[in-house]
Image 1: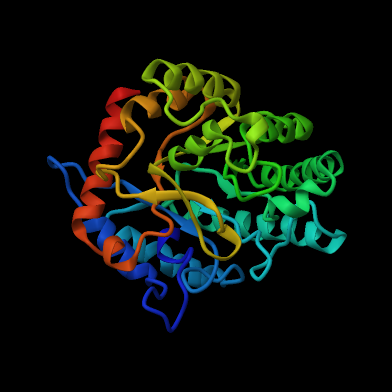
Image 2: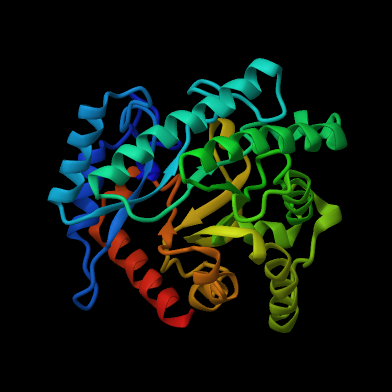
Length: 327
């Protein structure tokens, strides 16, 4: 549901899209008789108040269930301006980061007890930019690891797991090598892991924000691409607890704290760089053994006109079915 919020600004031509309208768009999609099974949620306003009462959460769960949908993974409000702060920020920032995870786990428990949620993780990222991170990479990696461990302990207490998004705009996950360093330093396999998004991890290959970690150069051949893709996925797959189908046209885009990040484009975009089904199969090998029970899609930064078009949802659903069949 977060594509209806991320990059959206009130009183502009791309305002936030309400949860109910996003649910309606989800429920209306259909490809060859198959529909979406459910939705992932962003635990922040205006979709979900992180401090909502149990009755309010149950009411939301009833709404989702009424549309024959389930709930999967929950995005914790870890960013400045929500509940949290950078995982390598001040003591207060890091305390608030863990608090954001705790609030999300509380809501997850209510949804689980309701019965509308039966799978998924708590999704985070480091919530801090690459420039600040680069001031002290070793020290900041250690801070992120400590913050993630504290958040991981909270998640374990609630029967949950955490997956950190691999996205080039977040310090500590700005390259595939940095992500490996952070996850290994955290050292909570199976509890704190990686969330792979096809659009974002494509940019890992190209070395955006981390040229030293690039595995490909412009003009690469097909053989070079798949060799590089295997290198990256072999390294990160054992840590991968959550997965997003997406497409990337090779450009970088973002707004606000998500500046210079992977451009999500429609799944059927003719400029898309990825064979979605084949790329997905690399990430989803052994997914069941890692506890992955559902996959999601991410269309952050889609224009509202694109996001509100039924054709967009059907194209993504077809790509997800193809990914499922290929894995």
